[in-house]
Length: 274
Image 1 (cartoon, rainbow, N blue to C red):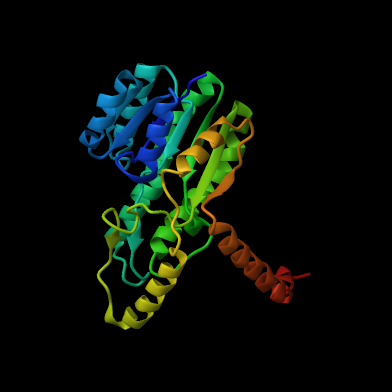
Image 2: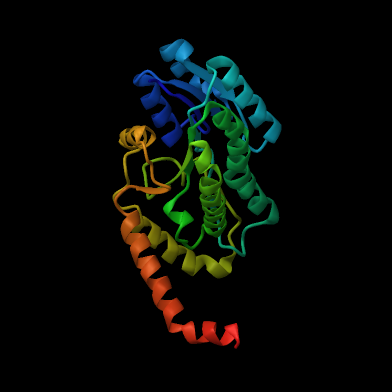
């Protein structure tokens, strides 16, 4: 049976690739973007299969309206993909209050508003699948993107709780955690804090480390096959990496955490008291 998708951030990158893949196999897609005119070519190509909507996920009321339009058009939402988001670059000290709040408005609250809006639809229809586009930066953390990391860690936290809360309704939740891909995440869609000279030397070190991590970026178009297999799986995972690099990063990070916790277990026991 065909599925109905609700996807945010479809003007480029993962969102567009996944929307096209779903449409090409005969599914219906509600594709949202800040500028829906960027989806005109898809509307011309796929016609009534596609509902293109202008949406800023920061606007909770607009999100609720978009979800209502989706249900009015297609009658249901089987897959909701929270893909809209961007990277805020800057050392933690450099990021302004406005920049920090904006990062969370889109990457955390935007995903929350969409999730809250689609859940009643999915509960009523007896099932659904929420895909949260996180990052390897949602389980690890890297210099110069601390607020981005923080936003993805927040997304990971509420989504893990959500998965337990909605399981009895037949609703699945999956956190997609990509490594480096050839999208414009670090390009046109990124935002950059004003640099402080004190961090110039370390900034170059951090940039070199990022270039190493991104030496073999993944192909966003190839990720579409993985997403289709994911949404068709009867028992999808709570978390899944996209790309070959994240497993190695996560393994080293978690082994380091466990070793450190064990080294300091005497302090943990001291704090417990008698």
